[in-house]
Length: 219
Image (cartoon, rainbow, N blue to C red; front, side, top):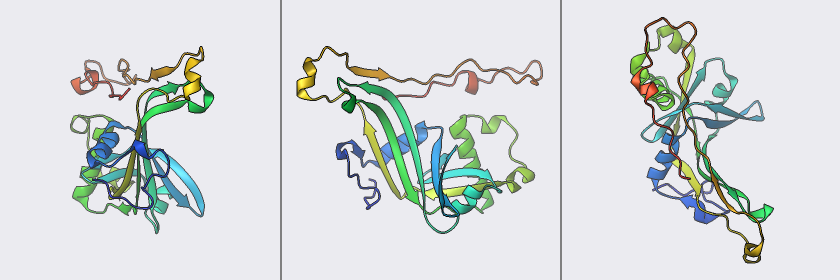
């Protein structure tokens, strides 16, 4: 179960909230991009970035020179969100238009990952979130790569999950209007792999790329 705090308690559309920790994992594991909210020199910033999850910890990484990561590792908490859009909800009135979605919001203090084993494991998780199977197929990070990279760990102790699925919820009197209403599902699909112009001849597209299934959607 997800813990309930003042920051994770829903005040609007409470019926869309989810309390099962497995649903938090499902949202995070299905995404590619998170948004990291931090305050840098008194100014709020929201940074889109890749991420990875190991158990109850979310990992993000970036350049050691990134001011946003330095601020995230400093005093105070960060906020991380992941949102998956599954469809447009088209109603009979403008007011009731919406989206079908799955979302997660995480609050917590980010820490810099210093342990060598955890750093490698977290970078592997981030890489595998982006492209499953890729870590073992390419060159691993060198000492120079690692020296230029900061990895932050955010605990999943304080998180909320919110979802909407289903048709529009119109006013009773609007159902008689001659207006089409329903859901326009959104699907994400992978295209054909495009080789690097500098790719050596004779190197085929590996199966973990050519055969990667399309991201799932809840509709």
